[in-house]
Image (tube, rainbow, N blue to C red):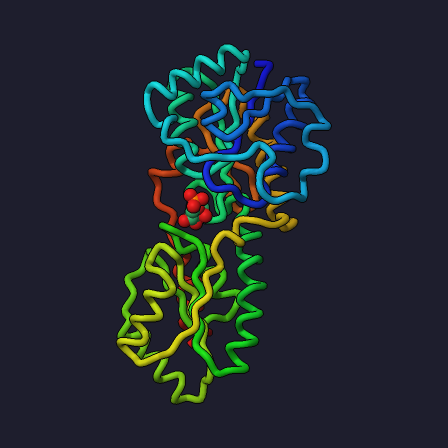
Length: 319
Ligand code: F6P
């Protein structure tokens, strides 16, 4: 094995650049030839490959986004797209591929693995919704970005005795919402994994107001409903006049925290070493602080559950 390609795919996440740097520099350390692929699987099919050296990843460790750009590719999901990618891979003499992304990206990597290309996945998503790893690259930064925004909202909520709904990202998973809720001391968290009982929420709000609480904070994962919908439901059911804030894509940007930078550096380096040891069809994980490997398909086949202790904390400490 000589030429290792790297690409980023799906939603970007802070720390992806640090992971690219780690893949490239570890490959060079072992006298391999790192190859960058632009725009994820789109570039893989369109022949957007370029040779990388130490300097190509200089000055990017602290930068958010991804210098390799990213895309969500419907074309690559087709058999034709995958065949085209394999043709380009062979044309460019690529021997192995590291894919940095989420579960959708790993399905793509798995397809290439089945066609004979050694592949390894590096989990990068702010959603942290990938089984086989305790944490994904970008999650910690996104939590901290949301944390500093919500702390500011708390100031104004308490000054005006207001109820605030803050919508955070998370289409299918509530990891981000839950961690933001616990770290901001929110009164409620609404996540896709748990059915929302709006009447109960209104009852609790009523009860806490009676006890003298003047302001409250609800952290809502976008996958459940929009903040505006929840505002309307609270108005209709309990007569509450909530203010809403949607944090949106701001959570995907910014410089990675030291936690994400170190995680990305370790995962990127470990991925190259796994390929060198002849492993393929695997994803790098961080389990109890140790670098691990698991089958790529664990990323979308195995469930990853919210920590019930954390959910209970919101109820115990918030309301
Ligand atoms: O994958 C991370 C994520 O940020 C989700 O939380 C969100 O729903 C989705 O990406 C949005 O993706 P897009 O970039 O396609 O709008």
